[in-house]
Image 1 (cartoon, rainbow, N blue to C red):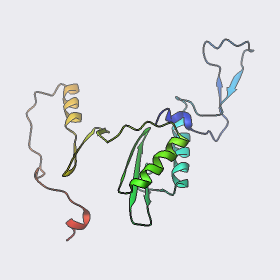
Image 2 (tube, rainbow, N blue to C red):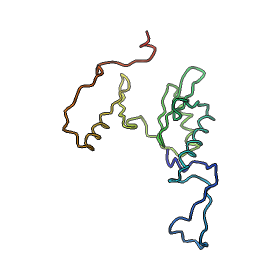
Image 3 (cartoon, helix red, strand yellow):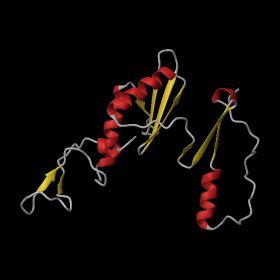
Image 4 (cartoon, one colour):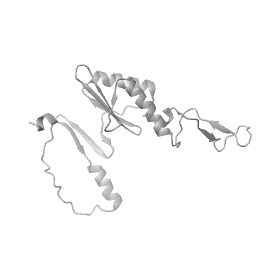
Length: 175
């Protein structure tokens, strides 16, 4: 999402001093009434997310009660589209390819967006795609963290989880 916080619609009256370097001939003490949110304004994130939520619900998406940044839409044929938003980054996934195209077009109509293609890295998680599925790792995040803290020479310790365990869908594990 490009310039996300500039897409917010303010619900209250907010005034600001004229920006430094403004060359117009105005009297001292003149202020501007904002019509839209600005970066740095404490109301901007809430205003932007409120507008985004309104667009998503108008498209038929349900907002998760467990995580308000998660939006889900089920089609009548049983397919699902899932959207997760973090500040101005969005991940879209699911098995309803037609809905994903419609969603992308609607978002482009309402906001200035840039599609980056397949997910590779998000919030410290690397995502690798293969014919066998999707694999996630935090190796880069951990390596960067070790470098930042000067701990790259530390000895590794095995984890208490079986590294060869294969995760599957909930249906399979419940049998």
